[in-house]
Image (cartoon, rainbow, N blue to C red; front, side, top):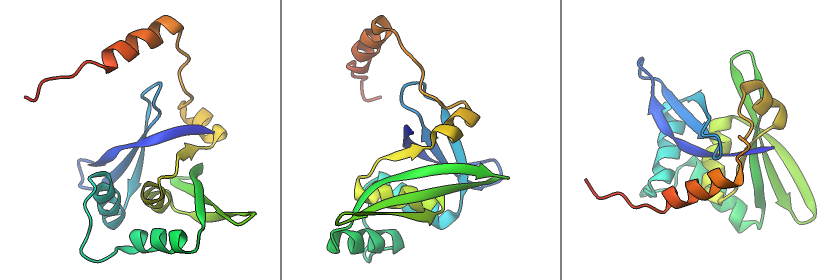
Length: 153
């Protein structure tokens, strides 16, 4: 599996919402078109905005925590036609459950649960999203550059 993180939520030229997943070493991005409600739920969590009352993803995350169900990860598993599929991996006691999900819901819940997000190896290969291999010298340079703080413009 290839770990990705949420690069953000954007809108295309037609006003449709896009979830941007990014592979950290290569910087490759995977855009997934999502609904307005899901975009809002993901964006609010990224910006640490809390609604006055729990939204659906907040409610589900609270139920999981209350019942001591651990979210192992979210996995974007495949692309069929123009539709992406995902799974939630949940651990309850000694049992692990795979729950079918839309990618937007899987990501929204993973963010709330602090769970990692992955692409299946097969999907990552198909999309050209495998992590880039870097030599040690490049890694040292990137660590150095990463420590530079830019001024507040």
